[in-house]
Image 1: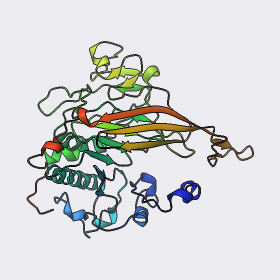
Image 2 (image 1 turned 90 degrees about the vertical axis):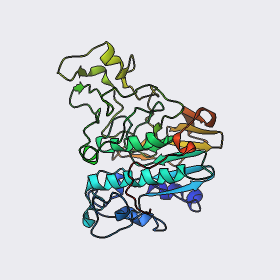
Image 3 (image 1 turned 60 degrees about the vertical axis):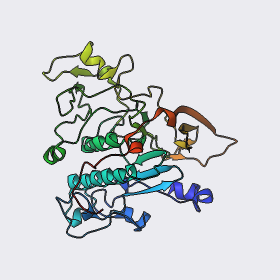
Image 4 (image 1 turned 45 degrees about the vertical axis):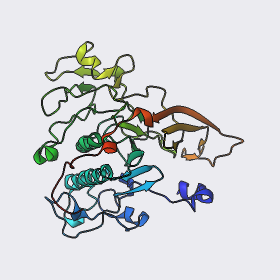
Length: 357
C-alpha cells in the first residue's frame, strides 16, 4: 500500500521484476497471490524440473524466471517455505528442489553461450547466507558455487547483512542427501545456547571459510524499506550466549571458536559487514557496468513517525527539505577480480536428466 501510493509518480512506467516473498501467499500457507503480480510468458513449468516428482497439473512457476539486461544475466527463484503449489501435489522440499534444477539448468545454458554476460546475479526473498542459515536453502550453494554466481540479493529478515565472497566447497551429493539436507548446519541459535557444528565437504574435509574474491558468491541482504525494521531473526550478537561444541562442552576461545566467528565482533564467519545496523527505512542502489558492480546502502533519517494516540508507526512521505539520506555501507565488485566458471563454460549441469529443456 505504501509503495503503490508514495511511489506511483515515478514507478508507474518502470518495469517491476519481483521476487515472491512469504507474505505474498494467500493466508501465508497456501494460494497464489503472487500470480497476480507476474505474467506467464516464457516461465518454466512445474514438471519441467526435478522430474522425480510430477505435479498433478503442469502449472507455470510464475515466481521463477531469468532474463538479460545489458551486460547482466538475472535469475529470480522462490525461497519460500510455504507450500506454494500444494494444490498441485508438490510439497515444500520438492518445490525447492525444482528451483534447484531450474537454477542449475539456467546457469549451465549461460555457461554454454558463445557470448556470455559480464555478470550473473541471483535474487530471491531469502538466501542461504544472511544473519542466519536457512537449512532448506543450503542445497542451492553447490549450484551457485559450481558456476561462480557473482552476487545473490535477498531481503526477508528486516535487517542488513553482507557476506565475504563465499566458495565454501559444498558439492552436490546424492538425491537422498539433498532431500534430507544431512550435510548442512543452520547456525540458528536456540535459547541461550549455540552449538558449533563442523561443516564438511563430501570428502570429510572442512569447508572453506575464507574469502574467495575470484570465484566466491557475495550474499547481500537488504534492510526493509517500510516501517518494520526488525524481524524474528535479529543480527546474531553472541555476546550473551554460551557456545557449545558437538559434545556439549563450553567453547570460549581457541581454534574452534575463531574458525566459526569473527573475534571481537560476535558475528559468524561469513559476515563481512560488522558496522552498526540501521533502524530507519532503507534503500539500495546498484550501478552495474561492464567493469564493476557498485552497491550503495542508504537509510532515510527521521522519516518514521509514531502516532501519539494509537502508537502506530508509519513512514512519512520523503521530503528532501526535511529528511536526510545517510549512506552506511558500500560494496564494489570489479570484473577484473573475478574468474567465475560460467565465463569459461561448464561441461554438464548437476541435474542432467537427458531431457530437452
